[in-house]
Length: 103
Image (cartoon, rainbow, N blue to C red; front, side, top):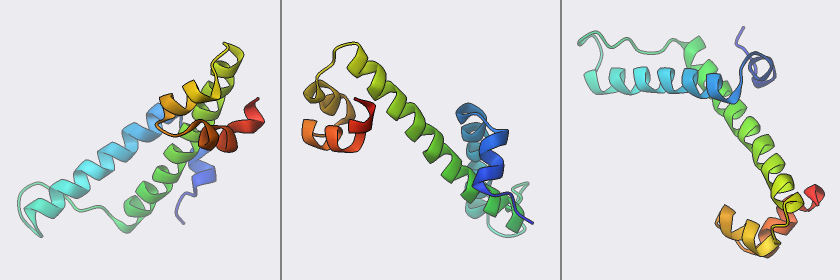
């Protein structure tokens, strides 16, 4: 049975999840370029492909938690919603709507 994002989220930090995801992604890309049976590039197994998919979800979740925390810290440091929106590449209204629970 494949690992779920919930299983992997408990096992990995953002850094280790990203590292493992990148290892699998690179191996998958090299195998795709080499083609079947060529070179040392070994295609991902079904389990590894599902692990990569679940790891992608873990990375998204953990990055989201970190973003929410940093918005809260920025607000506590006196940053305006316009400044936070600019740092996130969005408008102050969009930043406020997405993160108002941090306020």
